[in-house]
Image 1: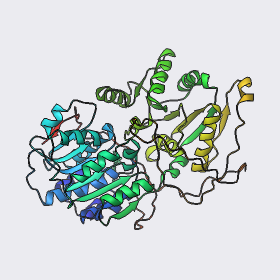
Image 2 (image 1 turned 90 degrees about the vertical axis):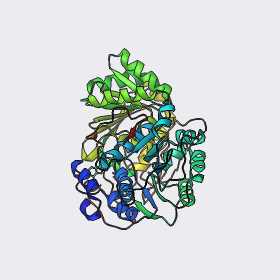
Image 3 (image 1 turned 60 degrees about the horizontal axis):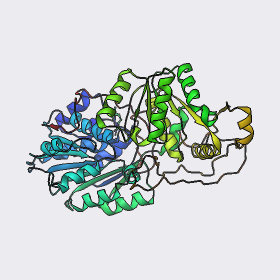
Image 4 (image 1 turned 120 degrees about the vertical axis):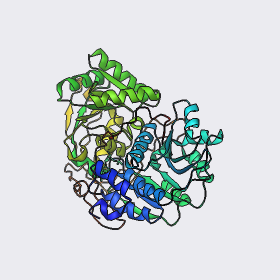
Length: 474
Ligand code: AMP
């Protein structure tokens, strides 16, 4: 599939795509759209940044148009579930952008904002409802929304939803949906528990996939700075002053850590702000807007808060803490170097535990990362010697869960994998056998196999949504 024209989408949708400057479908779109247009259920393995939103939104809009029935009050025809408020907002923006010539009615139901306006926004019924699972269930249980008219269900970032403890909410929601529906299920990774969830929800699904995360790492210039734990705040401030930073995204493992880092930076005279699950939706939107506009050039975030946010021009990703799940590292550094741009990722590593995480990361990405040792001599003696990097013991890339540490109490704890494969202390590390990523939009054309991944920038839409917390678009 070389062009969007080949899909035979309805004119108003094709026109919106031209206005969005979409010419060539991305690999996930090339695979998913024809299947979804036929009405098939689809399981897609793809990350944010691969164009997966359009891969479900376009066929759904097209099918809605083919049969434009009246929506009952307090009902919706399309239900999209996503793990975070930000991602939900972006998905809604995408539906509204692609559906701008068809007078689409849509609404958003996300946590962290009062429910009253959300209840009012669906009072007359909407065609497309995008929601986080918890709030959606609240709406249903308070009789604000009925699910018996849902014809299309999308689960986006299913692995992250499980991470965040939404599994029971999802099961309850699915139990209320009509059995006769089309379901499109997307996840960045497909471990056993996700595959089982999909199995229970989908009928004879087609499978599509783009390359798992490990190839991202090859496009980012990565550095490790070994540092004493107490010296991290000063080291971060120094780096941000010395490096040619356009926009820096600093990751911490905890919400508390994010706030502490912001305070430390402010003391050092660097304007920064944090986003994480404890901040209000308004604060998150304001902070993101300030980061996008360049008003602040440093954003501190936890993994979950950062997921689903695409900001152009992030020159630096700094791992203030190393994640304990190696795939999370790859997700983090993928925030820079998008769409083939250059990016820098710097990780501050302190203590034996983080050295262990580093080795796991190097094994996953099949690269030895260059290290600078900035520890004070005394602590250097106590700290375990930096292990020589291993050559990866796997021959094929894995598709695993990337788990953050910001899960609510109900969530399962982060799963620590410590596979000690490979050849122990070998000094030579291969650059990895995974293929170079193809150009954006280049379809590989294989059926259902693992494909090259191409990351795209999420650009602000032609029609910005000033307050999308609970709007209805008509
Ligand atoms: P997503 O992975 O769905 O979050 O998409 C990432 C970004 O790529 C968004 O800004 C989309 O608008 C953009 N995008 C998606 N598909 C295409 C395409 N075929 N051509 C150009 N841009 C695209």
